[in-house]
Length: 122
Image (tube, rainbow, N blue to C red; front, side, top):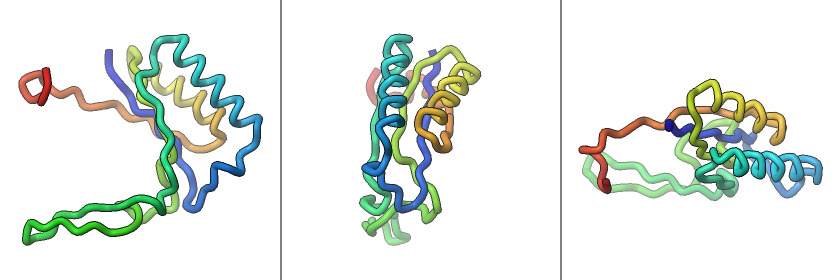
């Protein structure tokens, strides 16, 4: 079955500690619903984008580490689910539920299916 990333978008400077109890309850309920449906393979929250470190390969082959997110944007991924569902329509339905529970934008993207001969571990 295909896997999809359902990513929560937070504005720059977002402070999750200021969220209300109602939203937290809604997200917990959504997680329980996903587990009960047997579709959630992973879930994780991310610290603030300001905590990120970006690594970039230079022309000379060296890698430079800098503070901050890789892309400078007004929104960042604040958390995500990896769901295993039948198709994009099913993933979008879960994405709708996530947008409602999290009270913010959500991005849904399919994972690329890597042929077995290219996988590091089979």
